[in-house]
Each structure stands twice: as C-alpha cells, then as structure tokens.
Length: 406
Image (cartoon, rainbow, N blue to C red; front, side, top):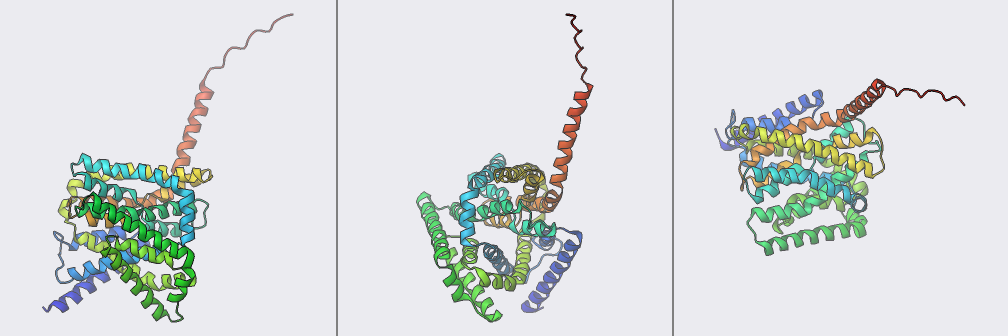
C-alpha cells in the first residue's frame, strides 16, 4: 500500500476512534484523557496494533496540541489578572509547590533515578490539570462558586511557574552546565517579563493589530503568530508551550473571545492527538512494574492537593465545605504532567510509564474527588461530633454534694 494512502487510513481511524471515545466519556461523565492515553497504548510500540505510516504526522500534531492547549489557557486570563493573582495567592502557590513537588522528587530518588529525574517527577506530581479542572467545574455547575477564584488562582500560579520550571528542566535534560542553565533561565524570565509588560501597557494595541472582522483572517493571524512565537521560544531554550501561553495573555477583550471560540475545536482535536501520541510512545509492558509506585504516589499527592486547596480557601477567608470543594477540585493531573514526562523520557525511560499510570489514576480520580470530597468530609466531621456527644453522654456524672444546713 502506498505510504500516503496508509497514512490517511491510519489518521482517519485514529480520529474516528477518538471521537467515539470522547462521546463515550461524555456519556459517563468523565474526562476523555484516560481513554486517549489507553488508545495510544493500544496502538503504540508493544501495543495490540502498532501504527507505522502516521507516526511522524501524529508527533507533529502532538506538538501543535501542546501549543494550542497553552494558548487557549492564556486567552482565559488578562495580564492584570495574572499580576493580581500573583500578589494575593503566592503563599498558597508556595504551599502547593512544597506539598506536591516534594513527594515526586523523593519518589524518584527512592527509585534510584537520579536528581534530573527527581526534578522531572516533581513537576509531574506538582502541576494540576487546568483543562480537566475547568471541564469539571463547568460540568458540576461551580463556575460561580465562591471557592472557584481560589482554585483558578492556584492554577494560574502553577502555569506561570512553568515559565521558570520548564527552562530549568530543559537545561538539565540537555546536560547544560550551571552557567548555561542560568543564561537559559534569565532569557526565560526576561521573555516572560517583556511579554507581561507589553500585555499590561500595550495589550489594547496588540489586540487591535490582531483584530479582524473576518473569522478566517483572525484564525490565520492568531494561529500563525502563536506558532511563530512558540518556535522562537523553543529556539531561545524557552518552552514552546510557555511561548504560546504568553501569546494568549497578550491578547484580550473581543479578540481573545473570538480567537478562543475559533481555536477551541482545533485545540480539542490536536490535544487528543497529543495524549494519543504520548500513549503511542509508551510501551505498555513498562507500566505493570511501576503501577504500585504510581498508585502510592497518587494516594499521597491526592491528600496533599486536597490540603493545598483547603489552605488556599482558608487563607482567602472562605468557610465551611467550600474549603473541601476547593481541595477536591485540584486533584486531577493531565496535560502538563504528560508534557513534562514526555521531555524527560529520553533521560529516564521508566518515567514515561510511571507518569502515564499516575495521570491515568488521577485523571479518573479527579472528577470523583471534586464531587465527593465535601460530603465525605462533612460525614467524617459529623461522625466525629457524634462520637464526642456519645462519649460525653456515657460519662458518669459526679455525685451531687449534700446540702449544708445552716
């Protein structure tokens, strides 16, 4: 069979299968990400029916998927919102980093994978999935809840932290020395600072220059600009994903809304391809040996994410069950964890299977914790209060003293 014909058949089968899996996930009420990962495992190296002709195209589509994921995320926020969140939520961001990055780093060291893999696995366990969490909030009707700004604030800080973390990780994986790593970090911070400054001071001018009454022209300009900036960022040793995120931040108002509506279908398509590609590049035979560590790590970091959300909501002055809702909502991991693992698999191949198993567990568990953490916490608290009342009732009363005759 001709190579182009085989590629078209394989691509058609992949996209059709993704559509069926996405519809199935929607009916069940879960994120389709775990099904996409499983599909990739089934048709990748060592899977049931390995793909051959379309592998290179899928790899390119996966790169575009990451870029579009971060672009659409950036379009959700303005530069002023990001600065405000940084000023008010940074203590919660610090707690988030300590509670959730440390378990990943410790696990990598215990497994004997070395310090570079420890930095990578720390990122895998640290970053929550903005895409999955946004979908869960919408599905549960919580976008207007009082704890939702706190959840979004933590997610924004994590996304901004990626502008520092990803260049450091890239330098470590490339074996760049201390001086080279410092230069890479300075370039990254300078790029982020410059884009934020332009977005704050001249965001309207940038948006006006990009704006167009034609949906076709707007789509072409925004997509072309994003890919160009992402490529330049990659050349400067800054993550292409971060470059796309910064483009999204720089656009605001009607331009951001119009670009978001036009690019959302493309994002969904290429993001699905990205998750499939990660599954394709992971040998299913490597998952069973790391399943127990992944399960233990998922258990620990579920508890630490709940604690993070609870602390962030408490610090924002939110009371009651909303604190537990915030904590349960932050549990899901997804796109960033897979991106980080994908970068690190060249240095530590075992990290890919572990990250795949870890994300599969938490992307399924995340919607459940978002829904049931609050009622479970209420039941535990009520049970504890009931036990105290029972103990108080069971305690014998001290004898009354005899009356004194005067």
